[in-house]
Length: 251
Length: 263
Image (cartoon, rainbow over all chains, first blue to last red; front, side):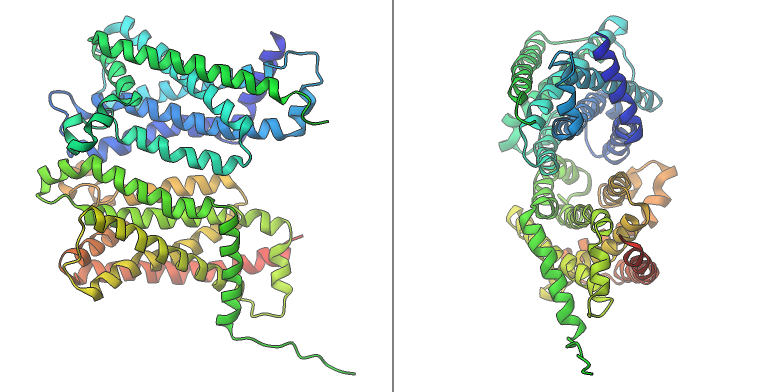
């Protein structure tokens, strides 16, 4: 356990130096302010105000953005001499990865706090009360962990880390902007509506919005849970397998 | 004693060689074409799908021409930033100093970079505009207006690349470049292109109205719709000229200092 704590502390300190954690906090703030100012009067969200509507999308976007940086982090750590050195230590092979994941959760929690802090003055309210609020946080962090496992799995396999994380930016943009997290499904052209309605980000943001308002639809909650837990298990398996594969590659 | 007079080439030919070097690099490491072509094209399609219906409801037009202008500018800028990521290491590993010592005109490395940036933006803007035309954008102002439509992002990106070079050389850090890209994309999407000015909160309207990207996007939109709108065009060229002259001077000094100090 102490190895895990020490390695996590190292990640947090490094992230303060290389500004990763600063970006993690600023990305939700900037995207929220940007979307709200730019699209507040453009997109018709019916009865609910745009800040209330868009916050879940901002949270999910921040988690995806964090995961992109984790891809680079995992790739660098693996390639560095320090990563090789760690494998000679009397600690679990998995503890460097667990430390990175723990760091991702800390970063995700900070991003979440930043998102709430900026959205509150714009009129966002957790109307569902503390119970639903807690579920909002738990779901967001589960998603963070699942995506970070995915990033870890990608980063340890990627040959050219700078390009791979940039390439992943495109599907990320596609999923976030073409989701009901940004605009109700009727605002999209008819032929793209089926995709918009059923893609995972739409389902997840809808659940989060439901948690914020205190009304969650059963089907939607089930779909979201299947996606999140499925991603968590699937990507978690790939990430752990990637660690095993690393052994004995160098040195 | 024989004096070997080095062969002199015209500046243009030397710049072309430097530009060719960059293009070879971009072909091998596809980050730059990715950022300047794929990213804006996909952004165009996605963003258009997101706002087209809402914009039609609000303004009566789907403002595809505005979205194309924004994506052309955003793509050119993010391409310049991706290209600049290699500058700090080229300075540190001495390549820049090596170029400085070669018997070529000393401006040619810099003009070569700008030439490559401009060429890349021509290709990217033509592709983005073509995708826009596939989605239904039309030029009602004639061929000259269409040419000018492509020329504006090219001129902007040439100036912008100069700014990026200065930033990359002065601050020696990749994080600064990421910040700079956030700021630039913010300028493109925090402009009167994204929504009519009246729809922004009153306190931020002056910033949005007078920032350079608003005039540029306005000018490009007019070029697509009904030809040359004098005021935004003049404003755009004034911005390009002023930033170009000021930053161009700084860039030459910064480049000289960097090239002479490199290891």
